[in-house]
Length: 216
Image 1 (cartoon, one colour):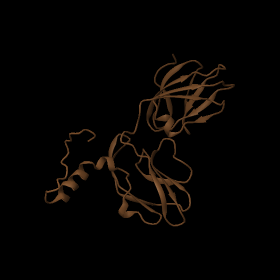
Image 2 (cartoon, helix red, strand yellow):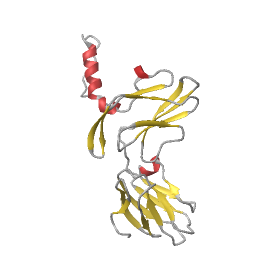
Image 3 (tube, one colour):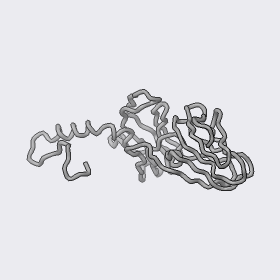
């Protein structure tokens, strides 16, 4: 659609029944509208959203249209749970491992503004280089979208890198000094330790963090 020539059946000024063409275009584009703001159901502190098809643990699942009641006079973080597709909101921040949808700023009785955090492609192939501060560290959503994770800094003990347990694979590099390992682990379950100066391929299987390859 970004090209000067399009494959879409666009509206023509002189055509009859423009609504038929428009509705057909909306229907074709409906996968991109998943979790989008449903304006007709938004009033006061009520936030309506569109459902659609989503993969839940590898199974194509239909998410129904829904609505949330937002909290007044704060920033609401709306997100989707990848293992169920359920939508929820909190006032703290996006939860690692969940899919960010919107931030919504509210007044005492209405929505003041909102920002769309949905993206057409949910994952990126990138490299994160993160300086450690010699404490256990929980990675956020923006961090774990990268597939290569490198850690620098000086450690005085083995430190935890807490990852979301949403199924995902990473290549990790413990590039810290001090001679201590990094344990990659979820908020629950078991993890694996990568020695200083070593790389490994790891993945979260939904329950634990496990090793795919030995340290190299």
